[in-house]
Length: 141
Image (cartoon, rainbow, N blue to C red; front, top):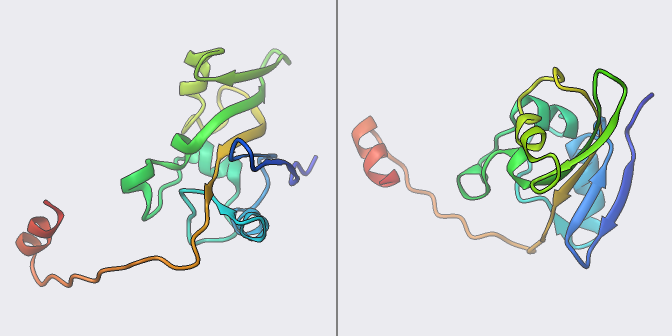
């Protein structure tokens, strides 16, 4: 099983459903062509969506949106006893909150539904160099 397909792009609800072996770079190129992106996109294009969920993906936008699993709305997984379960914040919420960073110990991830945001053609970036630890902490505060 390769599980590398983009299953659904729902622009009305701003959700995308993918299989776990989809690389983030591949998914982001598809979403950009649709005028969307994910709120958290790591720079390493070869990281898989399943790996980002199960291993704790973090990115420079995580200060605003959280870790990668914080933008995930639903998981489908096959548990050790062979049951296929759909988990989200309302259905099987304990399992939903346990899947991220579980490294596959709770089951085999088969699909992930992720929140999207509209893409903007440009971003505003302010560069503020610092030259000491104290100065860096002051900028962050």
